[in-house]
Length: 85
Image 1 (cartoon, rainbow, N blue to C red):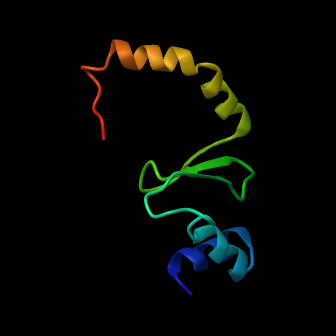
Image 2 (image 1 turned 45 degrees about the vertical axis):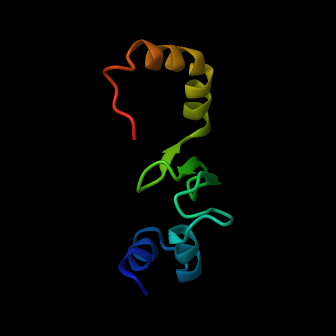
Image 3 (image 1 turned 60 degrees about the vertical axis):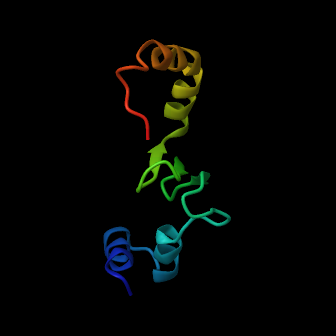
């Protein structure tokens, strides 16, 4: 059993099988691909943007999506100042 699985089992009192599922790549995801998953804490985890997933609760994600036009305008306005990856 890996250290990360063992840590999850001890910290949250879940089974080894459930811990292995949480640490495995999301089903249907491609290496370095984009995917969305409902996390163990019932939040939205976005895989494929960074080394670790970006996780937001539904309300937080809805707030971000509600401000999508404002975020896009900010990116355009500050494009010379912002790094891209």
